[in-house]
Each structure stands twice: as C-alpha cells, then as structure tokens.
Amino acid sequence: MQSAEVEKFAEEEKVEESWFEFYQSFTELFEFFCANTTIHGTIRLNCSKRNKMKTGFWVVLYCCAFGMLYWQFGDTFNQYWSYPTNMAIVLQSKKVIFPAVTVCNLNPYRFGQVNEYLNQLDDFAKETLSTLDGYSISRQLNEDTEVVDLEDIMMNNTSTKETFRLDKTITLTKIDAKDGSRQKVGFKLCDASGKDCNVQSFWSAVDAFHEWYKFHFMNIMSEIPLVLPIPEKLMKQFILTCDFNGAKCDSYYSHFHHPTYGSCITINGDMNNSNLWTAIKPGKMFGLSITLHTDQNDNMPILSSAAGAKVMIHNPKQSPLAEHQGFDIRPGTETSISVREDQVKLLGAPYSECTSDGSNLDFQLLYNSSYTQQSCRQSCFQHKMIATCGCGYYFYPLPPGMEYCDYNKHPGWGHCFYQLYEKMVKHTLGCFQRCPIQCRETMYQLSAGSSKWPTSVSKAWITRVLSNTTGYNRTSKRSDIARLNVYFQELSLRSFDETPAIDTQNLLSTMGNQWSFWFGSSVLSVAEMAELVFDIAAMLIIVGYKKYEKKKEENENVNLYVIQTCGTPDLNGRTVTSSQVHERSNNSEGKMDTKPA
Picture 1 (spheres, helix red, strand yellow):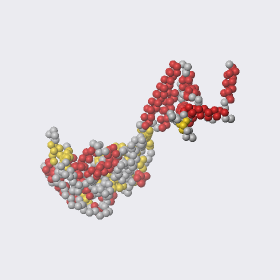
Picture 2: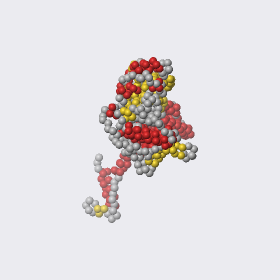
Picture 3: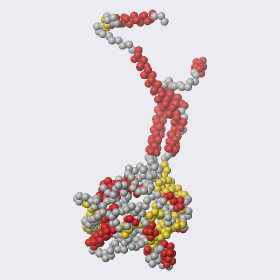
Picture 4: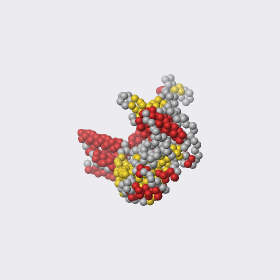
C-alpha cells in the first residue's frame, strides 16, 4: 500500500510545470475553484459534496447571496443612472464685482415722425373716456410735451411714417358679467376675415384703458426702432450726479430710450471695465450714489402714468428687461438698496438640462447679451409670433428682415397675438419647455428703504449745490429730484454649487461594500470570478471544437456505394452484381494484408 502511494507521488513529481495547462472536465474545474478561491462559502460546496443535504443547503445559500448582491447592484446602478445631485453652499469673503444698475425716468419721448398720430390717439382716448364714464378731460393730453426728432438721435436718415389710419372701430366698451354682479371693461379684436373675434376684458377700468391705449400705440410706433440711443444733452438732464466709491462715474454708462419707460441709463454695463467696479468695502460710502431729475411733466400721460424712476439691478453681462424686472422709486425721496450676491452653479448634462450660452437651442436668441431664461422665452415668443401672425410684437426685438405689427398692414394681428399670449401664460405654447435654465447664474438679494429727501432745512443748500454743479433749476420743487444709493451689505459671496450625489468613486465604493458584506471578499475575488468565466468559456470552445473535428473525421472515413438491383457496371463496362462487389472488396483487403510493410 505504501509502495503504491510512493509510486503515485513519484509520478506526480515527474510531471513538469508548463506555461498552459487546462482541466480535464468541468467537475475538476469547479472543484479547483471552490477549493482555492478567496470568496467565502464556496469551499463548503466542495467539502460537503459527500453530504447531499449540506451541499444543497450551501448551493441555495450561495445562490441567494448572489441574488441579493446583484439586486443591490441593480438598485445602485439605477440610482447612479438617475444622476442625483447635492447642493453645497459655500460662503466666501472676497472682493466682488459691482452689479449693473439700470435706471429709467418713466417719461418716454414723443417723436416728431409719429407725433401727429399720437395726438390723434390722445383725442380718441379723450372721446373714449367721455363715452365710457362721462368723464371729460379739460386739459389737453399732449400739452407741454417734449417732441424729439429721430434725426437728432439716429445717425441714418429717418423717413416719416407712411400715412397711418387710426382704427376707431377698436374701442373700449362695457361688458356685462355672466353672473350680472359687476361689469367688465374691454375691447374686441377680430381676425383678418372678421368672423372669429375675441374680447380682451378686465375687471379694472384703468387696466383696460391702459391696455387699449398701448395696443393702438404699438401700431403707431411699428416703424420706430424699439431701442434708441439718447443724445448726451438729454442724458445729462436725467442723471444730475453719479459717484461710485468716492469717484465720478459719468463715463462708465450706456444709455438708450425705451418706448414705455423712457430714457434709461445702465451703469457698469460694460464688462471690459469690470475691474474698475470692484467693491472693496461694504456700506453706503463705498457704493453707487446717483442724483436723478424726476420730471413731473409726462410726455405720454396715459402710457406712463407713474412719476419717479424705475430701477433694475442685474448682471453686467445681461441686458435689462424692463418689462419683467425692477421696481419704482418715488420722487422727493432717498432710496437705499443693499445688495447681497448669490451665485448658482448647476451641473450640465446628464445631471440637468441647463445651458451655458443657449447654443443648443433650435431658434435664434434676439438679445445681444449672455443667455437668460427670460430672454430665451421672449425670443421664442417672438419667433412664434412671426410664424403665426406674420409680424413681430413691438416690445420684443426683431429677427433680421422682419417688421413689427401694424393693423394697417397686418389686419387681425391683435386677435392672433392675444391667442398666443394666452397660450404663453398657460404654459401651452412650448417656450417654457424649449428654454432651459442657465448653468451659471448670478442673483442679487435686495433690501430697500426710503426716506424723504431733501428735508425742508437742507433743501436750500442742496438745490444750490446742484444748480452750481449741474445746471439744475433752484426754483424746482423737491418732487423733481430723487437720490438712489446702491451698495453691498457685506462682502460675502454665497455660492450654491451642485455636485453629483453618486460619482464613479462612490459607485465603486458602494459596490465594494456590498460585495464584502455578502461574500467577504475583495476586488481580487472579482478577478477570480472573471477567471472562472474565462475558463468555462474556453472549455466550451475546446469541447465544441473537439466534437466538430470528430464529426468531420467520421464523415471523411465513410465509403459511399451505389448498388443497383440488377447490377453495377464496372470500369470495363461489365455488369457487376452485389455479391461480386463484396467479393472484390474482400480480395482487395486480402491483398492489402499480404502486402509487406
């Protein structure tokens, strides 16, 4: 017995180690894997193979562990592919760039090229008020108004607007409510055929009158550019003094004219000079201080019925949107606005659908500034307006080659516009879905307060100083001036940074924890599993190849004979019977046996 074991051991020693050696069977492969792997529990499959009950128990337990592991893997990958995010708030104390401040005087000019038609509209408005409420305006609406010639503003020659006919069929009327409790006020608009009509009604007669007047105003102004430059002399009449951080800021602003909000000036609107607008300290003394001339003589008393100024604080890289931003300040007051800057940084695809510059939009942005969601929506609406109504909405920029709406040229455009606008308000137009949020956005948290300015005691010396330095009329009332202060509350920047909740490193760490929990192994054990899969695939290929070779060899060794019932002709043309075939084959075999080696 001992000699047999010694001989077996000697034979095993004689076997030389080779570079590549494969298993003889799948049983040998699995036994070797279970006995040598570092995965916990697999050795029990090999040790308990003589006990079928234990083997079955460990097989079930092993399969359940694998099932739970890969169920958790699937759940982890589902969370990873949903791309969740975390929001980190970082507070930094550093120098910050001062925001852009846009101020409008709420007193638009009347242009000589269309002043005749604006006077007709004012007379029509007086008739409408008299018919609607029996109220008669004794004072002329266009009295003491300032008329500006476009040729004094624009470099190119401007021609007078073609003959315009005011459509007096579009008038304000009282509309009975369905419940009969109260009357609305509105005006009716029809399409080009006159068959399909809708009524724009309002509970407030003031709102209805303003909207009706603005509708006619847009038609009159259709050939006047939306944004116009302001002459230097008119600009100095609005901004009396401008100081930033103790220094004058007269040469660091741009100016334009808005048809509703009048003369507008943007201070620090040029990012090329942003270094000059760095806030070094918080407080009013280190911010922006402006003295404004708030003229009470309205050029357009119905279109702009407010007195004072409109203030917008925005990113220097972005255009001011006067229709949607800002707030008004009262004349004869000093308004102080403290600013706190917040920056939001969002992750792009695949974590969100945000955009950095709007380059992935399927339409052209109409604003010459950096991307904002609001400017995108207004551009989208303008494109929809042109595609549906054939002309553009006057208060939004135009694409090249297009023109603004005029009911003399585009009858029925008002009916089309208000239908689109209703869809826009109900979020069914599609512009909200087509305009993603911006990935990086600068927001300003504002806190404002105001006080009476100047006081009765200080009015004399303040007006004297202003008259000596700016040409301001000392006899003017206190309500003709206002002061605005904008400054940082504190030089602390809050940054809201979006980060991945599960990145690649966290994914691998979670998978490693789950693998260790169920099998108590490491990444090398995963390599062992991969090796097992490779060995199984290799054995399947080898076994399949051997079967293929064996079948091919059997097909080559088979002799096929065609036997006829009557006989088979041999090579000499003679007929050979089946018995003769067997006889000849036996003779040939005998000859082969007797042939010498």
